[in-house]
Image (cartoon, rainbow, N blue to C red):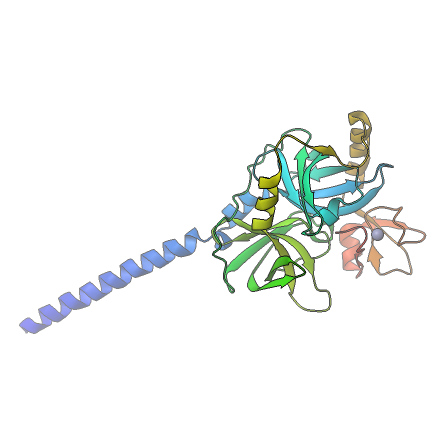
Length: 294
Ligand SMILES: [Zn+2]
């Protein structure tokens, strides 16, 4: 039975090889950002919900944005900040930060880079600089769809899409109105895009502006020039609004005949507003107003 010994040894070698392979695949699986809830939680600390206000202190939009390049800079979509005079950026820990300055924008590519009044104390998210994106790669989207603070959703890259000189990443991770300006992050934990648009008539057809366009815009900025968002407003006045909106947190307005909920009672899309809790409005089947939520 000597040959049995040899057979047992080779069996042991096979088992050893399988064990090593298994260990490696486990460690690879664990290193994937999209499977690592703690890593995603940490990234969410650098994503903010944005309340955009007009010069008359009316809240005109709710969107998303994320810290990049430097702890005092925030990336979002241009269409989120359009018409705004100042922004309250609300952190994952519900701290409110004032933003009144814009570093640079590209309205055609729908990108804006803003500067916090005081440092955000959040780590800039790492950005993907390699052109290594492929369909089917796993992604995480972090943003505030429908005003629901820092919601995390999973999906994959579906396709790449170019139109009118704009490049998009098409992806499946669910987003909604209010997600605009949020971060789309790959399995390596690097931002690959800014979540920008969703096709209401299709399922899971969502678009992100590519991060390389954001990096190009940042590189073109001279790092010294910043301009005011709309007309200036004094700190005291802005913080007075902060106090008011804190009370309104989680509150929305609807009208009896309408199907949408609004983030402020003065939205022109609504008549005779009735105030209610955001979650009640969702439960009752109301959906976010496309004018209030970007
Ligand atoms: Zn509205």
